[in-house]
Length: 242
Figure 1 (cartoon, rainbow, N blue to C red):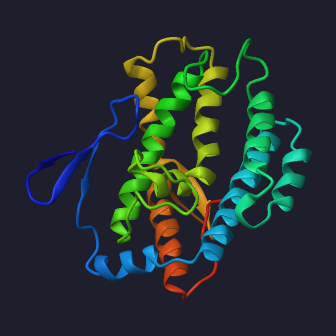
Figure 2 (cartoon, helix red, strand yellow; figure 1 turned 90 degrees about the vertical axis):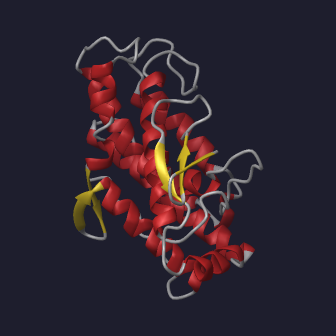
């Protein structure tokens, strides 16, 4: 990590060094020290409950996305209700496999894989942008993006960002889906395709009954997460795919 100017670091937001680096302030909140203490002291049962909420929201949004495109979502709706503390039955992976199989069923040879056939390239780039937005919001809320509630990897500086971004992924998916349906050539990630994906932070999403740009909604999510760490709330605010 290269330090630049006044307490600011340049961060590359994914392992493939996709060109969505961003400036991440090392001091993002006036109460950062106190907030990090609450984050680090979070109990295991709390983390398991937060992960349960996160996966329920993710699968519910995946189901809503399939319904929006008139695809079968009944299994996802059931699995969302079956997620338990810590997602011990790994409903996230089961739901993801079903979701992508049905979402891009018209794309020959498609399976969700970073090195797979298009539109995997578009999904990779879109998720990298989403990850950057999430990490920046976490820092602005006074938390460490590297200390996750579920993801744990000493080589990953964005474990918490990888946790929190999960329910937001379907908003990237729907943008990519529309790009695929447009019939535009997507084998090469050119400037025009990147320009569309770079609108992700400004996408309209609904959170807590109100519409706002995705990057604003993400700040509400990260602030609500801190309130859970602090003990003043038990619910993380996630957007609903409408």
